[in-house]
Length: 240
Image 1: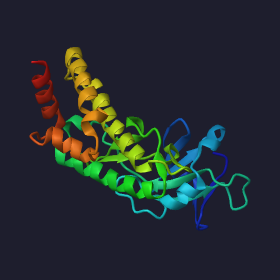
Image 2 (image 1 turned 180 degrees about the vertical axis):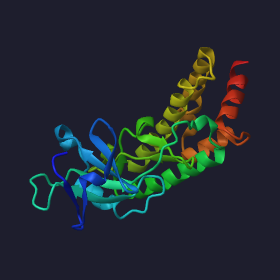
Image 3 (image 1 turned 60 degrees about the vertical axis):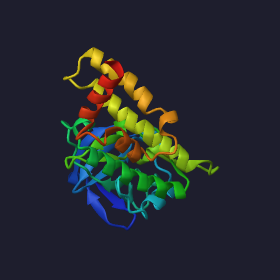
Image 4 (image 1 turned 30 degrees about the vertical axis):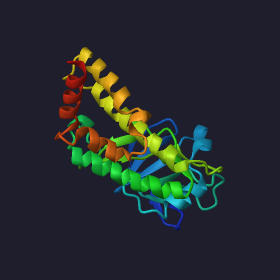
């Protein structure tokens, strides 16, 4: 980072020394600043940064699941680069957590919150794009949150935005189940293969048409305390 002071849209500033480095992704480096995260776009990927219109819209929406957006960050008040990043709500990640062991009620609550956010952004013709397990986290309080604003864009044609966003949400849920199952040390390879076949069936569009994704979870696992119990039950019913 090539300067010592960063300026927010409201003219306030913070020092480079206030930042704690968290990690680096495809398009940005992420730093912690107090109770917020500061996302600095990597210069070679600055064109992949958030659309200014998107930032203005996000700053006005009180999100339930997506982190709240605070302000663009600039190099300086008169810098050549219009912005290099943004501040967003910071979440502590639970690195030991698995969606397979979260209470069903928590998963349903997380996805209902996401559905409220999806309805809000769809009203502004904003599409989720490539929202996957890799930009989703289970926080230390056990909730599932989605983030990474440069993975969203405005659909200029206004075509089926809500339906497309719900499809992305369904893919996210399927991806979460596949990811945590594949990385689960308590399952052998045959169990993982059976689970994979199960997920392809139960999360297919033909079985979930017209459902909210939170409703899909309730329909599948209403008898169970956690998905691990439910997956074992469903696999046994299918492959026994």
